[in-house]
Image 1 (cartoon, rainbow, N blue to C red):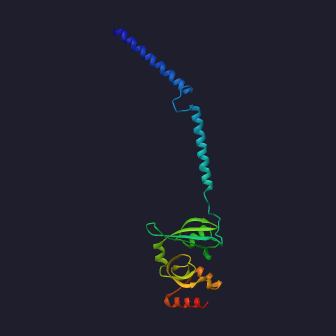
Image 2: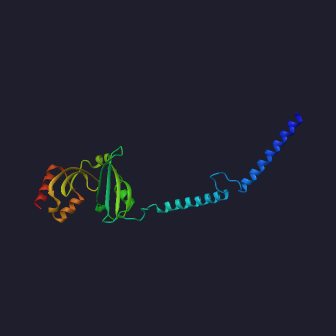
Length: 207
């Protein structure tokens, strides 16, 4: 009886070995497929194609990265400035004509002139920067100048072309002023103290 059981176990072992060999051989030859899977050879081709596509996309992305080297700001360019708090909150965003001292400048030259600016985007027709309010207030908060707000002469705290905070708007319409005065206001007319401000406003009213 014991001998019979041994022969049965041996037969099962041999059968298992044969089935395993046939299964393995069939799998590698591509004759056995699991549900939802493709031919291994096709999978290899798909993998290679995906790899080539990924490399082409990476190369394309690298080539499309904008380069500021050699670019210079045009005279008709816009300056987009965003003043941010220390916590990153946007306090003010303004778009204005590019200051004359930046016309023709490269990215490196802009950073040299205004190291406090963080340049977000640089193109010949548009310069976009972010400026920390605290830094600007410490540097330029004690300065004042006349500028333009909503078509009227306005008083600002700060430095023209660098930092400005609106203090108040006068009743003087910019449209009533000579062209040269409008250009001066666009650039900003600095003043020191209430007496000088009063004299500037009086001269503008007379115009």
